[in-house]
Length: 284
Image (cartoon, rainbow, N blue to C red; front, side):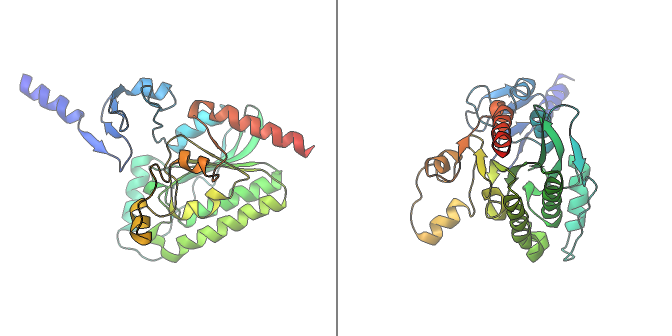
């Protein structure tokens, strides 16, 4: 009887690896991949999903991000039911989409809508790494463009929280075309004199980095985020050189002028609010 209980406990605490992110222990505990500390999940959650021991920022869902950033009760989601189509009849793609939708309770890799940040109205999009690692397919590109169109109609600033493994290979050329499509939409914001703030989180890579993620009037990033186009190993094999230590981290990019500021998660809402207020005062 006791042996069975021990086996049950061990099974509940089985480690589930989420790529290079943290090792999550099923149940009430989480292991920080940076400092290796075992942490109580509720404590981490109350600390904005940041390790209280070393400050590592865990990946979070779009749902939780919206809750952290947008004033309670003000978020109105746009295009929530937009469905992904299997344009190329890619084997197993439809089944994987359905499985992820059931598992994550979200329809796609981005949530978009209109909300308020400390009373300042804004158009906001938040990508979610839980869905195909935030990869950009036709629906992600379309939802971003529709968000921009809504912002243009209502003359609102736009904020996009980026997290992505890049273009979605199951949609081939269609996914790659979203790079041009989203970049053209952001250009319209610039022409209209509207603010666009891009927030880079871990990881922001591939076609997303090469398009709308890098086009912000102001580009913020979370601490320790992996940001780049190709992976370090691919780059090293291509240029036949050893890359600098910390290459493609948000700290390295800040030092070399690719981003404007690194902001800790517990200060992100206030920082965005101050940017919105500053831009609003300059437009008057």
